[in-house]
Image 1 (cartoon, rainbow, N blue to C red):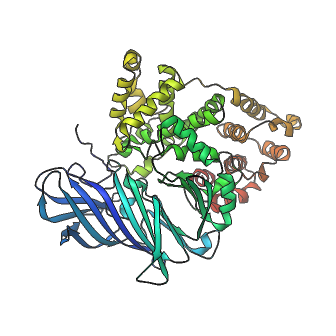
Image 2: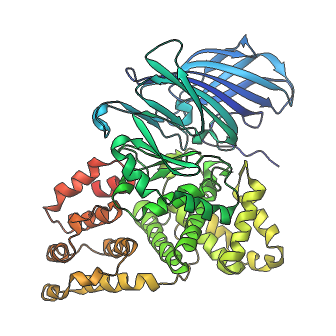
Image 3: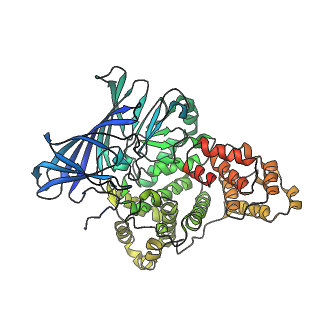
Length: 573
């Protein structure tokens, strides 16, 4: 097979592969840097190998050695988002199949894009500083010199020295702790990750953290201000893990812990192995919590176990994960619920394609080219929802959810512990459904994969749960001022939080409502007092669009009290 090039990496992974990282960090809160040492175990793939190229960004490289001998190194020119290639000239020539241990001493920069340093004032406890990392997509290179591409998978071991009042956690299994022999005011935490994984899943958090046990293989971690509430909210985690295992196969990562981050965390969740990072916006009595957790749990198979080979194939991670997440919803709720969530996803896709990118933008391709594109700029609902729409379309074509889930499970088994391209996925699809190849050949693959805009086929979803939302939204849109007295609290009495979200989302895709209407809506439904972030964000956007001045301070408060991009960006816009 032709080796795939990764346009987002300088690393020479057709010539050698990292098999293991051994990391040592000293966390320096005063200077906002990590003082680090890494030993990379590298397997050589060609004869006469003597030059190794790694990805770095904003790192200060102090010393490099290979198998204990000093090695010459040079940093290449700095690229705007890819950083600088680190070229290491080995003091020895290696042959195919040999291994070399390359040791690098270095320091991160205070502006490392993977690291978020919070002052005590930015935390819930207000007494201790806090540090967390976010390496996806290409930020691990600001944390450690590495082959920063999802096409390379390795195990890792780490030792992290932190002030003894704080706790360190990583995307790995805890392996004990001990006083730092070099400094009595510090403690060293140890971690091991025996399952090979890509660099973007390396994660570190340091803070005044506490934990509560929530299941036989799960704890929830957060500052003490949140921990009991979090333990209550996430009590169904084990049930979800078991449901996922019944669909996708055994969970291979051992521990499944959850970390509730401070409010500035920009994402809903991040599927770091053994330790899912989640936003505290889920703690506001939010039933969409189960979607986020189902999504992050699903990544344990699609994304973490089977990984996109480059970021151009990101839909393989996210489309399959949304598909699995909704299959979990189907098992725990109903098929109608899955259909309802799928309809909501189609609407999000429509918003991304039409309003954010434009229907001719190549970043709305399911498989975009990322040549000279920062992968962070291509991040949107497209890989998630266009990916899901394709899988749902194929499910209907191949004979329904049970039949298609058989394919998804075999895809996971075949490609477990490796990285995969769209072509490899498609080849397996044709092999698995070899008796239905005539149907698969009728699929317009080019329109699905390589054409911008909405998918070529709109699925027919079951609208049962959406009908009431649509009917009520239409009543509000058509109402004249004289009709407003006809609305009452009873209109949404039977609605689930998912239906309330859908009702508000339907109003947001139309022209702004008159001010009189949103004022009446507040009178009958008291939306201002709802804490659920998904509902609150949509409601406040509706108010600001209707130019209700009283809503502006509330919207601004929500935009700055938490940093989740899903809420902060649309509110500011």
